[in-house]
Length: 71
Image (tube, rainbow, N blue to C red; front, side, top):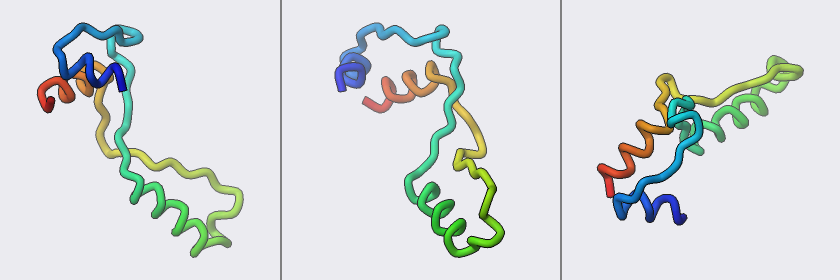
């Protein structure tokens, strides 16, 4: 929680790789849907691997900047 408070306070925070790492935001509901559909379509899902991720991405720097603007 400290890093969020530091962002809210306008303090400098250290980001790995200058904040250029890419992350994909995903909602818990969407992850639950992956599990639900795998269970309800068990025969097709057996042996498969699934990802739940956003259609677009954001960098850690962009995410931190968004948090700063939000708070």
